[in-house]
Amino acid sequence: MVKRMRLGVFEVAAVQVGGTLSWPHPRSRSIEYTDPTYWVEVAKLLDDAGFDFLFFAGGYGYPTVQGRLHPLSVTGGINFPGIDPSYLIPVLAYETKRLGFVFTSGTGLDHPVQTARTFSTLDHLTGGRIGWNIVTGSSQDTIARLFGHDEMRKHDDRYDQADEYLELALRFWQTAWDDGAVEEDREAVRYADPDKVHEIEYAGEYYRSGGWYATVPSPQRTPVLFQAGTSARGRAYAAHNAECVFVQGTTVAATKANVADIRARAAEEGRDPDSIRIMVGVTVTVGETHEAAVAQRAEFDALQTDEVVNVLYSGNTGIDLLSLDPDRSLEQIVADGKVGQLGQSNIDRFLPKDGSPAPTVRQILDQLKGRGTRGFQVTGSVTEVADELERLMDETDLDGFLLEPIFAPTDLEDFAHWVVPELRRRGRLPEEPSTGTLREQLIGTGPHLSNHFGAALQR
Image (cartoon, rainbow, N blue to C red; front, side, top):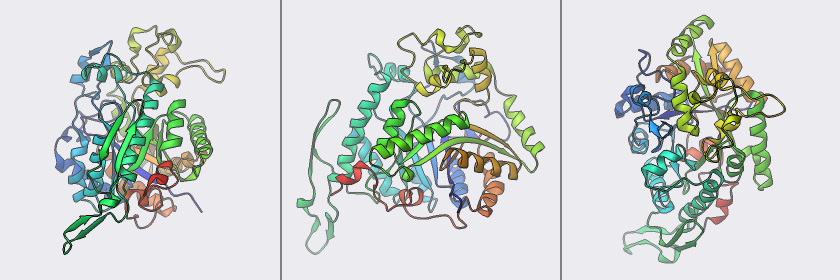
């Protein structure tokens, strides 16, 4: 029996996704990102095609080069500007039947009780179709300055803080209300049983809270917990906390190693490693023929430049590639204590390992051009695309993919029209899309947490 493929779409409520340049192309409509009717169209397409979820990245950060907003970020729309996607989700949920919605929320800005209430509310409004992508932050220098902080926390310290943040949020979701606490008894004029509503008292290193959580349990209680981080500390966090993990798709060998490491760490935590859904980003360009797909991809590649790459990479890692010696590797600047505290995965991938030489700055620019923060690149006919997606799953033990469109939503329309039926024919996708809460559809369990330390907290 072949392994079922899970499918999501990686998007941003911004000019374009992935830190590349594509919005000027006539195949792209991403500049309509402030129009809810555009997103309704996308969500309905994915809902009907059987995708599991629509994922929104986002945050307050933006690309800077040496502390300054680069003019190309503005003129090119490179990860700047954008809107808060969470406000779109109730609209999209109302217009769809089964599609899940996931959005990014950081652990270093709001208090956990604010985040808990937001996700409880959205889980109610979507009928249990919400997920939380937990991030410790990106563009941390930028955000620290924007919010008036003296300095950003170190990379691993942010994960320590995130552990505590999630623990407190889980206390609100899992322990504040017992099952059956809500009675809604009109005759007795009794909405809930006070003996089944509990005070939360928490005092940690980073957060404190005392009082009652004034939001009733939602269909999932806790949103489906997503996490994206391929650094060693990120993988450890994912193995302990996440139900669905995004790993960075650089090479098949590296992806296979990261997947195996996360599953092994989860087993050490006492979790069933196969219950964790591990996915990777993939940009798919599909055409009726191989030649048609290659020609379409070439139109995208022609829009990319070194400057576009540099703006994105600097915003993610704090490293200005164009200021470095192009013939040397990143080792020339890693000794700087600040470098390596953000965008760790995108630094580690270009440092020497396994005895192989590290790529030069010039090679890094060439490798990232047209790719940005995207994962695997797949271009070809329907058969070629389906073959490659199956190969990636089988060789790495991945559970599925997040499509990262270059020309949105046209790429998604092409995938739904051509590739989805082929994947169904091969048994990788079910004939009829699954239904239920996002956790039931994606994880395959009941609506509430299971195989997770938070499950033991539920009253």
